[in-house]
Image 1 (cartoon, rainbow, N blue to C red):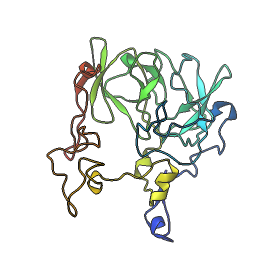
Image 2 (tube, one colour; image 1 turned 90 degrees about the vertical axis):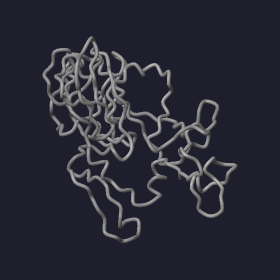
Image 3 (spheres, rainbow, N blue to C red; image 1 turned 120 degrees about the vertical axis):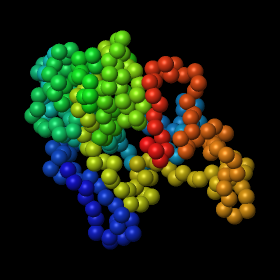
Length: 282
């Protein structure tokens, strides 16, 4: 895989770079039976009010139904394609099971068309195979990790991401998350061996603001550029500092610069062994 750069025919092209998919992807069109149209929430809740800012617009996307539950244990399946998915950063592929069923799965790094994989309690520790955490040796990199038994993969799904198995004790497994947080998860949760494909995605450069708009990301305005009525950091003659010790959001909550914003009584606090490292020291 290589990063594709462009001739500087314009200011935006000069700094633009993409992952070259030539020779990696094997299909141009998705499997129709595993796709559907989807209405994006674009940051609105069920009342139509904006709850997440800076979302909206963007290109229309066809949704691929990805299997994150892997609820067909001990039935081998073969990877028959490597495909692009506009809804996620990693590559996906069609898993063709021995019983004839086909499903989309998130592919690990280095997987090739024709490889046979398996989900089960006592399967081989091989890239792409899936098994419970209690059967995975410490130090192994995993992806598609469950947080609750049989709840479906929730962690380690972005391009190049992996979770490391650190230790096992009293029915729990210590996992080092991509954020550097160490967290306890029940040993009966399932995970896939390896790391997510398309690891060079992070090296891409958009090159221009318009590309963010294609992705459905709207502009973000700094609080210091606003008026006092609009943001706690706003106002002042000329370019001013924020005028307060800690950076806060539009609603007065701590934000950015490594500040803690986690609720003091969050249910999962007891499962966190060490908090994530933030800021320059990380």
